[in-house]
Length: 204
Image (cartoon, rainbow, N blue to C red):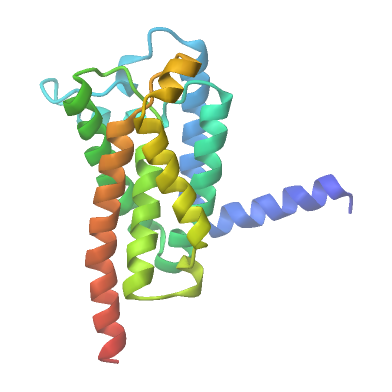
């Protein structure tokens, strides 16, 4: 077996073990292609749709990525965090977290800026980070144990982006409201599910 076939086999095994994480990654890849090569962005991916009954558009902006680095950064974090949650708690649990955090982070970004010109999985990523962080504090589990340095870096990055320095240097807009609201809703969900998990462990 060659190195390439061995790597492919590992990817296939990982995809089978984490089907929802894999699906979200593939959808984000498609969203990167659309976000990078199509203008304007197709309507079905743009935030909004309440008046038209197109409720999926409250969620779909998370799949749109503007550039390869944007997709790669979010994709790596999705694999790191999403796969842990899916492996421990199942695909349905991860789906619930993704949908709720996508809704809250997208709405937070829209309310803060008044613009629908945004996209990316970062709000969900921060929600998954906040969820793992708080849930692990309340109901520790090896799969949810993240290095403190990793959490510290992501919190630093959140605050650094909020300074507007990257907007100025790179000429791109950072969805800071989505990041912040995603983190808050993730921590809140981690508090709820962590408390329930700790009670379940205590009374076993």
